[in-house]
Length: 589
Image (tube, rainbow, N blue to C red; front, top):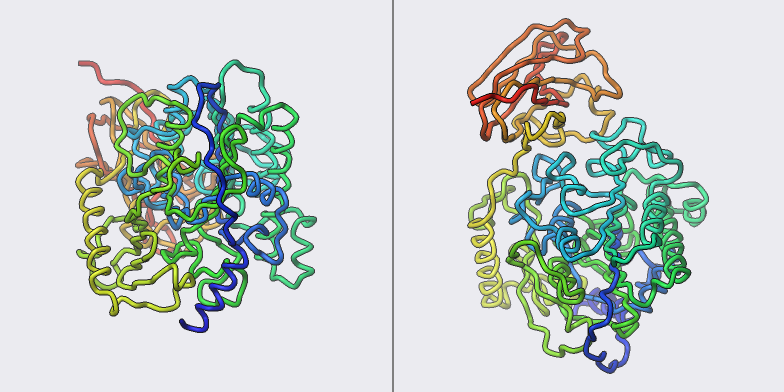
């Protein structure tokens, strides 16, 4: 074996010695259904906790939870956040349900899909969500229209991104409680846990389901100095020190939640699940394996090597699960919804064809013959394309996994003998490559046969305005932007189109803006142009104009919308970064 492989194997053995065989848990009884809390951190890798060997970050409460849980040591997600969240909420491939990228209109979870929250709500649970959604902001994508009865959250993919109030910076921000803007005092992670603790400790005859997806540890790395200073003193640069500080703050909050559960006698019959949405963003470097700690794995966030998608997953349910039992069976985030339906005896409001399978018997210790599956993880861009159709740089990143092998594009790794993925042995095992490649092609063809080309923004459902932003367009010139500071970059000329669905024919007002309502400024444009389906309208502006407004009669149906603002200084064009569409009057038959 390669010397580096021996080193990695030694590290992993030191961190991951499996506990002795545990007796099987008794068959599930007809007792009360459990409460469920699903905690998902952002950008925290498998190695970003002390129970997995990190030599710098101390996570005593995560370590405690791990010791009290069934630990899925071979658990995988997508390599970036929105795809993971979409697959977790539906039990289906992210490309099948419309949300396979973080922007570009590809972060919208298809309204026709059934979410985990809808299943719990339909089955008599009260449901709450606190933190980061990132599956679409306006109805019908918003979490309060997807089965969550109580919601406190930020918009977009981060608290400081376009779509949120411009002053948000992780501290004392404005978030949205059940769709209404509200100013909160305190740090974002503290607030999400405050809201969760308040929800789970309310008196109720119903069991609860809580989805707690934090925006930490996503960039920008901001946290109080008391959490980051210890890592600065260890010599870490600012970003990693603050990243680790955000983990320390999260762990402290997890301790608060665990204590609140104990104090309110919620511990025994609550299924508490912890996981992350992808590999580490800042705890290790992509190419320098000596920089940081990643539990011996190759790759980080965004990668289809192991470090990009293998994450921690702990499941504690004292009434049913044997504690500190570690499982090396191959599992994936798509497995959780069918698992919860079986464990909690849930009924779906409509049939679901899952891409995952129930882990219930595995978690309960009743299944010693978990199948060796062939699972696909992809990282697609805006336009979905298969590796067989792609050439050059357009080939998507993907991995096909089973218990032994990882096919990473055209590279093959024996993950049991080479957990660090140092040695590509594709040439030595052509039949394995052929079999795994065929599995990828079958999966891709199956998804292509069911997915929609576009998930569209519906407009005209009611008089409430729908606002779409530069984050949401499909680029035609340049790309998208997502930071408010980018809105004022005068030398940035980008554009794209939105796919919308006019649900009711009628009179509409369409307003084009460069800046959001809470920071409205002149656009610096002398001409605005709008194209909606076959309709095209142009108007002259003064350089002081902040909103270009149109009133148009629109037919019902799908439409493509694109805008142009001609810069008065350079005569070059950019798209309008904010578009607000309001139905004024419905057409009468």
